[in-house]
Length: 67
Image 1 (cartoon, one colour):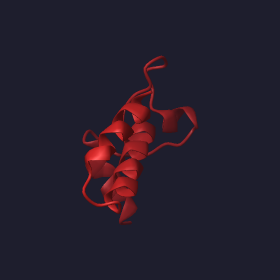
Image 2 (cartoon, rainbow, N blue to C red; image 1 turned 90 degrees about the vertical axis):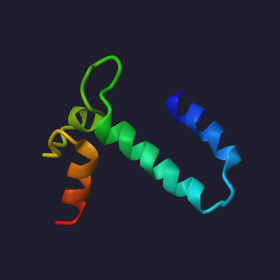
Image 3 (cartoon, rainbow, N blue to C red; image 1 turned 180 degrees about the vertical axis):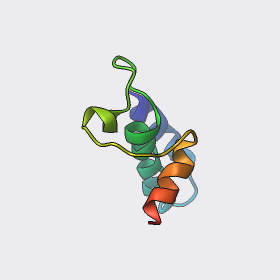
């Protein structure tokens, strides 16, 4: 439901090219940034993917992507 709620906000975008970029960011946030509501763990941790993203996970993911 979280993604559906955020996609509804895309109706106000002026350019169509920005919607896929925002959606990719939402997917990244769901899988690597926010803890799952029931398990309290990140979905990537449940998939046995260990990332050393640090305290600021967005910045950590950016740093890991540039290695």
